[in-house]
Image (cartoon, rainbow, N blue to C red; front, side, top):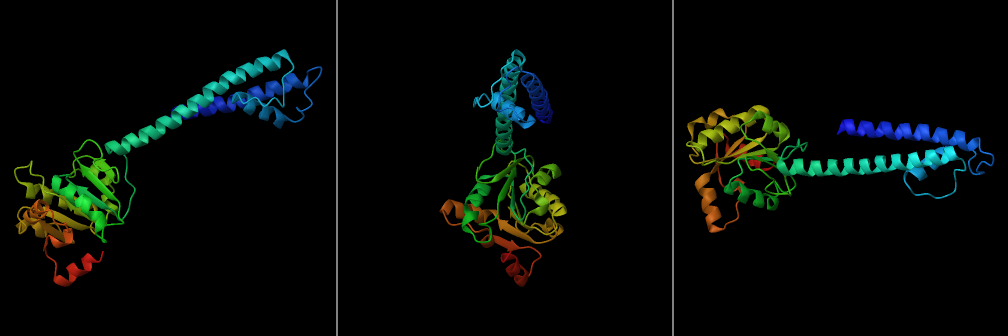
Length: 267
């Protein structure tokens, strides 16, 4: 893309400089020069009007050389402007496609990172906007889904345990990180804890919400920092009943006192 833009820029500058100069030389030496062609800038104006095929007709070439330069300028204009439009369209389409497929770097800060896009994660994702603590925060989804599951939010394609995927999700600047139980694994809780530990290394300050099949897992204490455990059975029960899901209300404290948890809820 950069090489194409550089080539277009060189053609643009080259055509502007060379064709304007030739036109100026030819027309100044005409037996009856155009009275509107008084300054070199007039030749530049002629080039812009001619290359874009607008053709105001305020400056008209009166020599054979000037007409040949005019034809070359028109052909150069077709190439320059159509190529420029193609580059812009391609750049916009590429950005939209990269965002849709989750290959673009997220630059949000103070946002929410959702790891493992499960059915429970989808329910939470739809609930977050109605919760004041999360309503104004952009959401990054990081999982093995191939296209953005929610156009309203950012999406990063990749395995959540991968540091590169989490860096692309800008997890280091996130305020909250959700990790949901992936039942495809023989031990979902160990996978959740693995992701949580990787997330904690990248971001020591984020509040981690972990969906656990065993909320009293002995390894929870090794995650570190502010951790809120969401009981998987409570979450699924609430979904089946059609109840409003509040992550703050489906947790079990992990190494947190009641006062600390209350302060966390104010984040």
